[in-house]
Length: 237
Image (cartoon, rainbow, N blue to C red; front, side, top):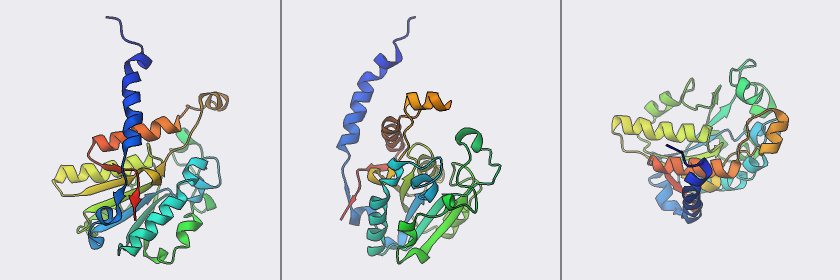
């Protein structure tokens, strides 16, 4: 049986996916933030090493910073006081470096919170959780935090990268709730997440794997939505 070439078999879906991405609507702030005392904002890897300096810094990621800062301010203005920041803080010999190269080593400026978040007047409320892999759940304090904050049933997830650490966190929050039958909302505003871009030609010159930022950003937003995560264009008002 002759297989249909990959590009031909996926063309219709990719066309549909583009329309799906364009059709995402904003969620009004009162709906997104829900009951402030039962809502948490969780950010992933909004650190200098992914926004402004170092080998993995991406202008695409840096571009979401203003929207994230606005979301933090709106959330706090609505009475939300639980903010959790997961941040790459790698051992000097982290196994992850085999895939992505050395980055965000503990004690380096790359592993520091971006100034825009650190300067917020309510930054004293932030709980910072170092992580040594793509996962915000493995080897971090997430499970302990969830147990200590069992009243929280709404999570807004922002940061980078859409297809890597953001996806891992949002899916963990969704799937652990599914497993236990827990009522939980997980919301991902598309304007507050993004991923890096590595064109095929540049990747070939570096001996790296290519990474289409636009495609993978959209595809993983869709995959999160497919799994019951509320993907919205942004949070308005």
